[in-house]
Length: 474
Image (cartoon, rainbow, N blue to C red; front, top):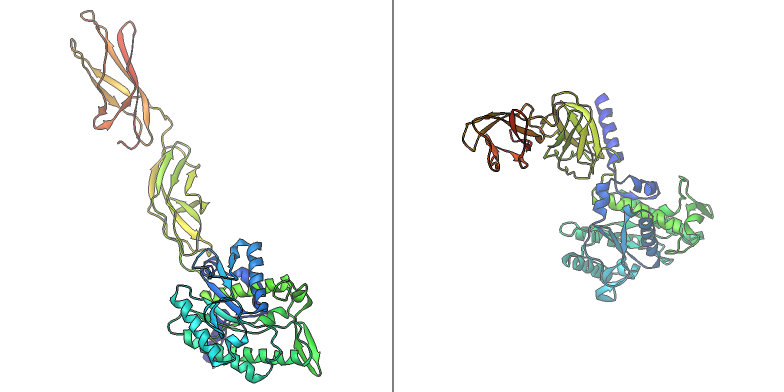
């Protein structure tokens, strides 16, 4: 018995986290929880909320939300050819290809007679879906925007809507990448018996959708019957029946699609949530991204001194986005950088030591990549400009001599100093003419030096030049 109870708990948790896609008042504020990867996915979609004047509230709300926060950018097309595919913003319109009166052409006014009241309407709607799909204008999400249709008030009429919409879903199921979703209708200006009958019809739609977890619902009516921050619907009464109606804040002033900007914004937020769910988001706020970034590559030493070492690396990639990097020294975390900073300076080195550095990448979900291949670095000793010690091998009477150079420092950075050649003065001979040098390679290492200068003292002819050997030569 204990085992059965345990399994039931797991099943209920799964439904709560990965439940059916029903966009009602409870999801309005959840638009802000959509992970960036699913926001980006929505920006590849085309939403056609086909309808008459009331459908404008959804598009108007989407436009307002996009202006408030560019994260939810949208492009609205209300005439002509719909916008082609892009990944820069959501495309929203009410466009259909054809209607009950036209077998072709872009239509921006779709009523109940076009969606569900006759076989011709259903045939034309299917043909329009096919046209879009075969002409690189696939509709990602397709739903019907109800208007003031007081004559639609019986259970049979609402069932006609359900049957037609289900046909479109079945039509797209196998070969057309269009998600057809169910909708509820308007709740403004409906009172008395008409309002109650509409409420019963919307409940019929909700019950039908809930009977199959694969069905999707945009509950327009429910969203507008709640105010922001409230979990209590606005209601009215007809005879002994109480039913929900639109709130004052959501209807006045009626400036967009017959409702207020506040109501339109609520619709837009719920629409973003629904589209993200359609795109593939499971609705889980935390832990949905379990893929770590790629391992940083190209770890390189830029400079080293007695007191600091600077390294850099190449950027990592991630399925959502890299948020930063962690720098490790000898296996222990040393520090971190932002995603745009691909260099790090270690200012806590001392003496002459060797350190091994590695770097990992992180994303917003806290996933961390493996550490990069380690880079061993030695910091320089104190003398940054070592003297190059010269022992000349002089042959009297000739114009050339050999210079033996002993470098006393490690070649971590450019090793520089002065080469001094002392030629003892001799009473048997003296220097005559100019001095030239052809020393450019030192035991296979490149030697860069300036022109030689000459001086003398009581005992020596003194030749000097400033010279250096590039870092990494030995």
